[in-house]
Image 1 (spheres, protein in one colour):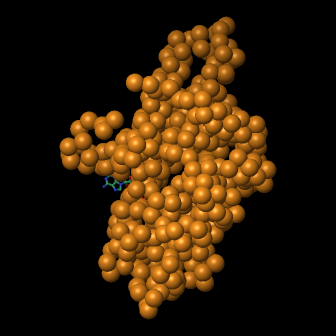
Image 2 (image 1 turned 90 degrees about the horizontal axis):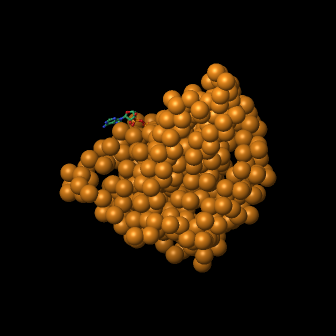
Length: 382
Ligand SMILES: Cc1cc2nc3c(=O)[nH]c(=O)nc-3n(C[C@H](O)[C@H](O)[C@H](O)COP(=O)(O)OP(=O)(O)OC[C@H]3O[C@@H](n4cnc5c(N)ncnc54)[C@H](O)[C@@H]3O)c2cc1C
C-alpha cells in the first residue's frame, strides 16, 4: 500500500500554497474589510489555470482528477474562504454537472469560457423552504412548445451576482430536472445579497425565476433525472469542502505553534506548559485524520466509485475537526485571539463555521452515512 503523493501532486500543492501565502494572505484584511476579491488575486488564480481545473483539456481546462482538485482546495483553505468559495463553486458545483452530464453542444458552448474564468458558473438548488430537504423543492418547470418556462425562488446561491449562468434545479412533470440558465435571461432576477459572518469576497443571494423561458438546449442530462446530477455533484463537493477544512485546520495549527513558541507565561514558552503542548498535539492529530479521510474519498472518486459514504464521512469529520482546531488555536492566543482583523484566526473561525451548515450540514452527513451503513456498507469500499 503506497499512501505517498507523487512528485506532480507535491509540485501542485506547493505552487498553490505559494500563491495563497504570497498573493492572497497578505491581503486577507483588505478582502475582509471590502468584501471584494482584488483583481491581482483573481488574475493570479486565472494565470494558474485554477478556474479551469475541473474542465477537460479539450475544452481548454487542466482536466484535474479528484485528488488533484482536493490538493488545490486544501491549499486554498489556508487563505480566505471568500476566494476558496468563489473558485470552488465555479469549478465544483458550478461545473461538475456540466462536465459529467452535459451534451457535447453544451460543453462546447460553456466550458472554454469557464476554463479561462471569463464565464463564472453557479448552482441553484436551495430554496427558502427546502435546504437539507432539497428534494422537496417548489420551483416549477413547464414545457411550452420546444421551450421550458421556470418559476420559483432560490436562496443562498453563491457567485450568482457575478455569474454568467446558473445550473438551476426545477420540478417538471417527470421529476426534478437540471437547466442551464444564463443570468442575462430577463426572467432570472437577483434578489437580496446577504451579509455573512465570514466568506467575505464571495456573494450569496436570493434568486427569483419569473416566467423564465429557456430553450430545450438548456436541459442537462435527462428530464426528471436532475436530482441524481445534484447528488453526484454534491458528493464530490463534500470531499472538496473537507479538503478546504483540512487546509484551514493546518493553517490554524501553524499559527498556534508559532505563537506558542514565542509567547511566554510563568517564565517559559506556552508550549512548555503541558496542557498547551497536549492541545497542539490534538490539533495536529485531528487535522491528519481529516486529511486521511479526504484523500481516501478523493482516491475512491478517482477510481470511479461513488464514495457517497466516504465523502460524507470526510466532510463531517473535517468540518467538525477544523471548528475544534480553530477554537483551540484562538484559546492559545488568549485575548489576542479575540481581536478582529489582526491575527487571522478569528477570520478562519468565522469562515470555517459554515462548513458544518452548507453542502449538507453535519446532521445531513450523518443521515447519509447511516443510510449507507443500513444498506450494507458497514465497512468503507476502500
Ligand atoms: C455561505 C453559504 C453558501 C451557500 N451556497 C449555496 C449554493 O451555491 N447553492 C445552493 O443551492 N445552496 C447554497 N447554500 C445553501 C446551503 O446548502 C443550505 O443552507 C443548507 O443545505 C442547509 O439548508 P437550510 O439553510 O434550509 O437549513 P434547514 O434544512 O432548514 O436546516 C436547519 C437545521 O436543521 C438541521 N436539520 C434539518 N433536517 C434535519 C434532520 N432530518 N435531522 C437532523 N437535523 C436536521 C440542519 O442540519 C440545520 O442545522 C449556501 C449556504 C450558505 C450559508
